[in-house]
Image (cartoon, rainbow, N blue to C red; front, side, top):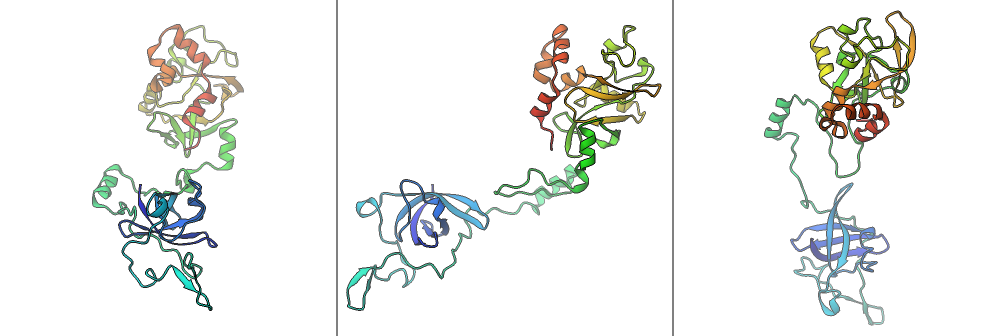
Length: 320
């Protein structure tokens, strides 16, 4: 923890400067000294503190007094550097009476910040990192600040509009394959939203339909509009979606953020119905959702039935 002496402090203005033991000066605000019963600072007082980053640079935080000097409270400044710092601690009245001088007047002084405390090199033009960005294909620089900023710097065209957001939360949004982003964690995204994906119009021939699980290709599959769903919705870049992409048929998808499991489908004959879909087992396996890889048989079926989209979006997050 850095240590130093108070160089000057103006209790009326509520700020001052601390001279670090290495000779650097650092700004201190009154809000940083409300510890250990310490309310104000006095010139020459020995203190220890932490260094934080403020809007204009480094500043002292959590300032605490140190046992130093008579009574463990204060001591003279080390190595005075100017006549202003070596002036007498007393001032004379008109009658010649010596009175304590008190803290220096900082009302006409601007606080000076340490110029090299916690200074960091610039990495945006560093040759090694520039080469790494080229290899990664990263054309845009991100933003960093020690202060709170927005979570992600996303260009306007990468954000969903209000109309798109409304469609995502209701009937879904029709997109082409290239509109769907594959995220590093295996999930799917449309612009800056994590989404689920399904096909609005299931093919009439289930033998060619890669959006159906094997269990739904049997003759016992019910007719369109029945409670038992045939197609599944996808939450991850599973092997089913990979097979669909490799087929090169240019599938059109629907992306959605609905959490009730109800989706708008169009039958091969053109009729529209809202029906309940189940999650793709291959997606749960791809994400190993709640240990899905380590179970089999009836337990997998039970977990598919119990799958919650609300829990999924809560775990992974909806906004990127």
